[in-house]
Image (cartoon, rainbow, N blue to C red; front, side, top):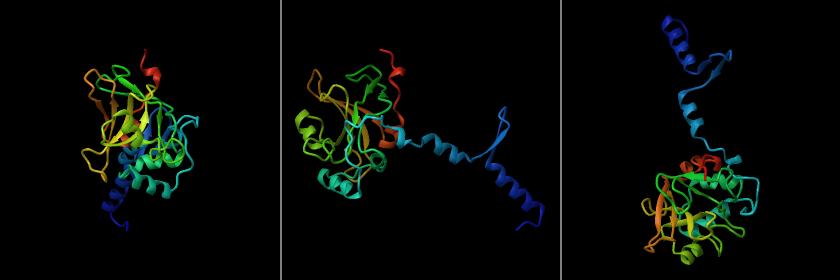
Length: 208
């Protein structure tokens, strides 16, 4: 209820927090600091994959998610499921992920060929999916294989549940099993899957 100068001042301050003047553009935007920060970190699921469908499975359903989690024994990240609801697997539109240490691919990044979906021919829960790949290639048995590099077997992208447990929020790791000492080389790419999605860069940013 407005009836005093204090109330008018309060109203002005609240409204002002949601406005931002754009110099040189002749306009005022409606915004908040929290909204700005959220916009910076939001993932554009719609455009994250390229237009191809080579690794794409059927439209994702809740039943498919439940069956996959039961089969694999892990709770899948919410952002991973949200991504697959838009497109159930495929190749990233931006294919390179920067790293702070060398990988078998490059000194400062790894190229990701695909992110696997659920079900279909290439899903993480299929006969040729995560469990098979871990046994076939000797990846550390710490979670779920969700992606591959162009090396087609020596390297993989995994959800790592070794620190959070099967029901926790896994970090994302790069694994290279083609090493001199025979021990898998592991590089932590992101502390969670949403952070992983946000980190991809274009090939053009990494000159050969």
